[in-house]
Image 1: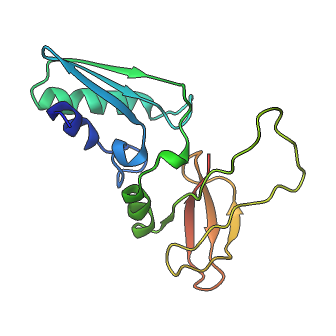
Image 2 (image 1 turned 90 degrees about the vertical axis):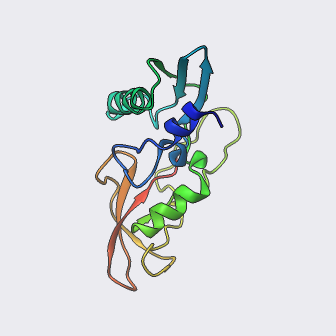
Length: 163
């Protein structure tokens, strides 16, 4: 990993500061040529409100590290998926009391079927590990999280949705 890649990988996500951009899997590439650094990121979704802050934080971290010519590019394809969160990132989420996402269900190509009673993935309690938790709200502090409660330990917690 180059020096610029190391610096970029250490930048924290503004919405989940316990994770770095590398942990979250949105850091797609860092190229360094003749003093110029080009960083490519893929936001968690195209309307992510943290995107501007992420760009600013990357630019600031790299400039503080001595890189003067920095460009941050956004790549929307392939689309980010929670499968890109690293094992270390998943461990950090659980340690902070946030349930990490499970694997993203794979679908056959073609139209997505509409179901009126969708099957929800198993969400384990990050506090006690109980597998049968209840969803209190499909919306959490950010669009990518939902609010749950564990019937065993009665603790509320957020879950990062599978995307």
